[in-house]
Image 1 (cartoon, rainbow, N blue to C red):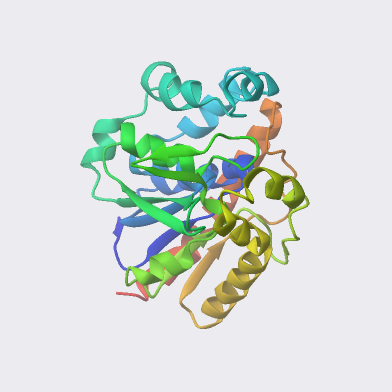
Image 2 (image 1 turned 60 degrees about the vertical axis):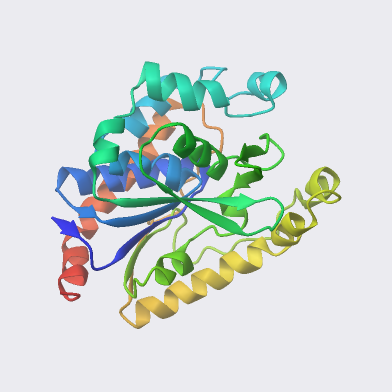
Length: 288
């Protein structure tokens, strides 16, 4: 079943994204396809497997390589400037080790967008991913490149970092495309409130002089995030948003080396996805 009447919004959250992967795998197993989706950070790099229709790929390669120092480690950060190794994660894995299905990705009618933060403007730039090849992979990498532990990703003369810095839950973007009704997949439980980032002093030292607009965005990131959650609540009450989120805090690290913990969070996503199928279909069916 293809759903063109509403959009799908995928929050990031580093390895909380295993929850997202679990939900999306259940969607695919039940032949449930949104024609329009936007992912931020982990929501983009794991969510792109939804467009390529690769059930199980995100959990598979993360469990396989979570202890690999070239995938994610202090060694990688010191050697390359990226905590999550760019060459290993965005070349070797998709083209050699766990091949990304670029043909299916290209042939899919799904419009899939990845958001990354423009360092000069501090605003989120949304790239429509169409082929799964070089430029798309650059934007996917940029979308998930966390400040302080990632190099700025240069694309077409612009520098980018994590999309979650500027637009962690891209509901406004999807509404701007004309979708009055949306499904929002969060990776934090109900009642979560984001606090001010404790790493802001280090970020000011690293980025403040050259990228003042980016730092202005980072200073108010928690305010924007919490305001977006309030907007989502309003949309839910108005019948315009259907929320999918974990039943409790996922308690997983941004850098997770425990395969069992990755699997645990993935299975929470699968269970949650299976549990919302019926009410989700009711929500969608009302849209005509």
